[in-house]
Length: 348
Ligand SMILES: NC(=O)c1ccc[n+]([C@@H]2O[C@H](COP(=O)([O-])OP(=O)(O)OC[C@H]3O[C@@H](n4cnc5c(N)ncnc54)[C@H](O)[C@@H]3O)[C@@H](O)[C@H]2O)c1
Ligand SMILES: [Zn+2]
Ligand SMILES: [Zn+2]
Image 1 (spheres, rainbow, N blue to C red):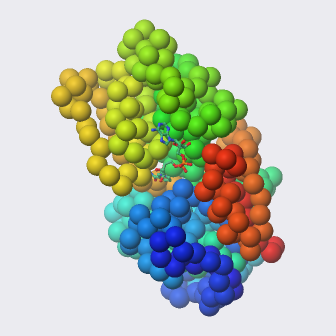
Image 2: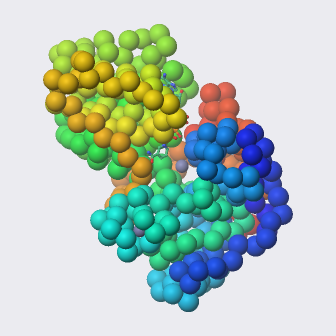
């Protein structure tokens, strides 16, 4: 089969590799009908995640068709169409029994395209297949459902639910990439009074407007603190969601929150950020961090089925799987190409 192989920092190619096969009895092999590229894949390619070793097939999002199942798999059958989630779950450990699949103690969590071969391939081995896949509902397209593999559950769980977004809230979202746009989409489920999107790129702010942010702030030339203050009688946002992953944006998000408000960090941080306790200690903030668990996938699936979430609009570019190197170029140059999510379709 063919797959996108990481060969060390800044090196990748679409290579012939051995076919994915069932190894453990709880595995399935899924033919990849649709996959996409995540910002975290770009982090891997830059060498930011040294645990990902040369030779690894990357990618952790897919919709596909089950081709084979191990002897212990009971929920899945050959021919089933499923979402392969970015998070795998053993289903039995302390954290999985608490629906905290991201923290799985038995070899689950974020493993695909990270610790084991991933989804940017013609086929993928999916461990713990009963617990790590979700059936594609009738009436929902592959590309829509693919957005449940990572960005929507991440933004919903780690941003909106951890941030306790509530009716009437002023919600400030720092970063309007696919994760920030997903946070806008999911925050709107709770009828906030304002959703304020903050980004340095006008193209991303235009997308934020289209996704339902009623206020957009380009913080290269406007002051987000002043704009949030003007919307909140000087108090600050009820909830700030950090969706970039830099020290500057974490500190900005902390400054935007009102006393007793919530700061929900989603960004993956590679460097330390300063927590200004000298000004925050008396503000009664709740600060949360999180790796996506994907416990909300069934909820989000129902919202897609009933059209309360429009997931198709994330897909800005479409390629065949064997054009993936070109797709990476488009995704990497998002400011120029306007890319949000690129859809890669297999030979189904
Ligand atoms: N916690 C999790 O489980 C989880 C899961 C998936 C992704 N993530 C992380 O979420 C973050 C966002 O992901 P994405 O795919 O949307 O990334 P992205 O790179 O596409 O988007 C980030 C956005 O932030 C903007 N930005 C950069 N610096 C800024 C600044 N100083 N002020 C304002 N805006 C700024 C960029 O213009 C861009 O639009 C990343 O760190 C990613 O790794 C976390
Ligand atoms: Zn991802
Ligand atoms: Zn587990």
